[in-house]
Image 1 (tube, rainbow, N blue to C red):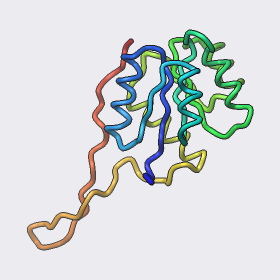
Image 2: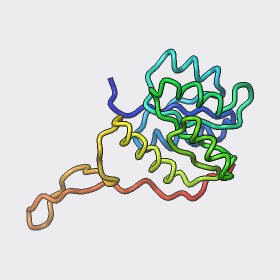
Image 3: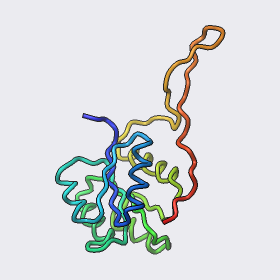
Length: 160
């Protein structure tokens, strides 16, 4: 069984789902996508997830209702990802049980940092520095020197 945290992305906009899914996978996470609450429920029944990235404005059951329902048992952290960036909207999202709230457009590195912070707080991911030890290289003097992986590239703000 894989030890990488498994993230469920729930968003009705395919471009956003695909972009977030790809970004998380490139950064070492297992990621699965769902287009709405019904598909999310099916995936939750069939798998185990460490965090949900949840859009607020979806057809059918909206993200606030989904968050309230899932937060009732408090078993999985939720990061709300939404175009509703007003202070009142953020407060409502947090009050119904979201662990964090990121308005669109967003920087993918900020999304990644918030996911890591939530997972650390929920004890679903071991603590590790942003720069991970990859291998040791040997210097010209024959000493072994750790080489670190670079941080994920700063790709700017995702606008949808």
